[in-house]
Length: 290
Image (cartoon, rainbow, N blue to C red; front, side):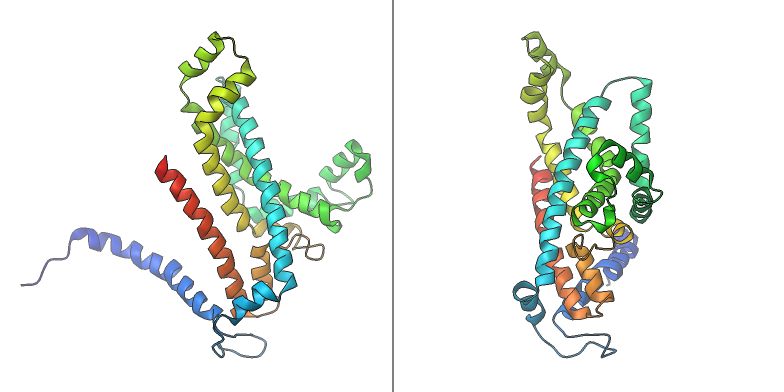
């Protein structure tokens, strides 16, 4: 007598098949590809088996890869820290009650729902040397920026890329921190005020310790988003000038579709995946512990 298949198996099978086809299979295939040689300019199909040679060359004999790692570290550091500070400040301002604050909280979602590619193109227009409004305003406020072409200067191009990513993600992170602030018992803050503590002491001694887990989650999530940032960089700076804004994600793209070295690009992608998985593990441990 055959056993009857439970109904939940049939209900979950479409989703499981979709995940298998769209996530598991590409991950497995790309890993196998990273162990082989495949240069599209010379061969139509994956070539000989090279084992860990692609990984070895990446980590020991590729200055461009190491430069992309440094660029990624700079981008990640500035992006995460500034996003966290800006989101925390905005959340502290918007936690008050009132129609204006409620409207502002609703409007916060608008930058987040925009396509990163559109944001990059918009910032490229804003910073245009001839008709960019941001270029004009910043040059008026900061004389040192007069005559500067943002996307032709390595430091200014990095600042533009960081600013565009912050503009995209800071509103979403603000909403997350607002949720954390809403969970702080008002009694603890009121007790501190009764004891004579000012607003700064109340925040540092009472509010901040209670929202540390939320800030940790925000920092980890923003790190993941920053590591895989590509669309904005592609449309805003195209990795330039030179390789000054070529992050690890952009290096993978450029290796695959610029140099047509698919096996080498797959190995670089798995290095990036390993970093992302490490950060994801910290995120899961923090969430589960909380």
